[in-house]
Image 1 (cartoon, helix red, strand yellow):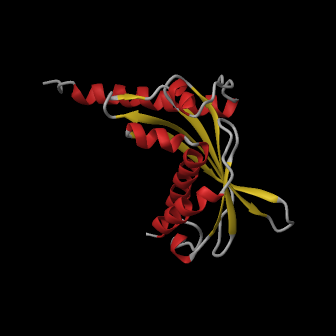
Image 2 (cartoon, one colour):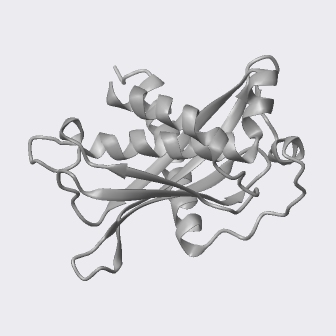
Length: 195
């Protein structure tokens, strides 16, 4: 339930924040770890990271101006796949920052990086978690993903995608391998059993 309060805070506070310059300027959101964010190990629950990252993507859409096109056309944000690496636990009352940025894109999807940052004991910034997601906007009327060129056009941006970094390429290759393995497993399950 607390994510609803954070979402309302996001919606109310964003009009007073400077507009992000798409496509590469990062969204940065401050949070604090509260009691309802904890799991039985008394650190932030793994699922909570993903919930906060949803808010990071919402902020990216709101402050880039893309939300107007999303509402106008009835597009639906979709995350196709994601991976996360946890590096440091986050305890109660810890102040954190969520950094969300677009890394690259293809014809119909984008890759977004989320980093959860905190101050270390020595005062230096540490990365508590880092995630990559492949996301898109889905047009229900057309029953298709919205082309990336149209997304950027709605924001008044013409940009070429950078080449995927080694990390992004590995993420996309792993997702493709899992997709193919799932297709093979599905075919095997559909084949009749030998008599």
